[in-house]
Amino acid sequence: MVKISDFQIKDVVNVADGKRLGNIGDIEINLSTGKIEAVVITGAGKVLGFFGRDEEIIIPWKNIIKIGQDVILVRFKGFEERKTEELEG
Image (tube, rainbow, N blue to C red; front, side, top):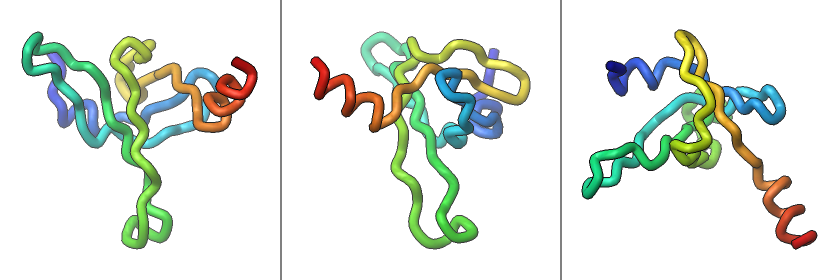
């Protein structure tokens, strides 16, 4: 069993490009099923964490590849990739 506080201290890394996305700040739970639907990643603040914040990233639970001791590996397509797919599609 894993606690939410254990999730929050792990770095979240995108397997598509190897970049660190941030840390889990929140979890979306489906109250009807009791299942986790997604995790919300919060980025680091722009100036010592005080002034401004990066946008939140929502990762569907199905996109979590592996939960390790220190890292959570996810598959995430960034804004640029989604925009390119929309233009091509």
